[in-house]
Length: 187
Image (cartoon, rainbow, N blue to C red; front, side, top):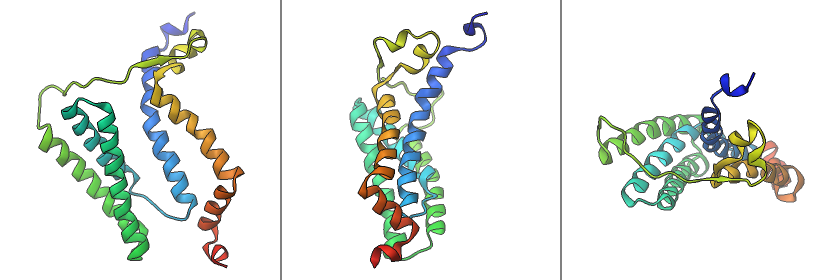
């Protein structure tokens, strides 16, 4: 019996593709949490980044411009979180919850202001899939894993790089030490 009868390969390929942004956010959250900052606003940051990136990409017809706008929007929310949490010494949980709710509402507002309410979803060009020459011929897995957009490969490749940096380099040791015992670092 073939696996194609039981499982739709295109759904699994999309699951790998759609998990890449979540993995990227999880990597960022790992670095933030290990450094001692509690950021529960990550979903709000992702929503603002996604909606602003989509709007810019939609109107400019450039995926690169959309990605740059998403990075900038998320960074600005991170700056707000940092100002409140570090400089103003506010409670990180309260600031994070506030930014989470703010991000949820603002992302919906951005979409409605610029795109509006439509009966059909707006159409956008997507990134082309890049096949890994030999590995894409592996039965079943080759079709799912090795026919993805380039950014998906970069995000999954970032996992061992960040693991190496966090646990095998002096900067990773310092970062983890800041999160575990900041007073020892000061000494």
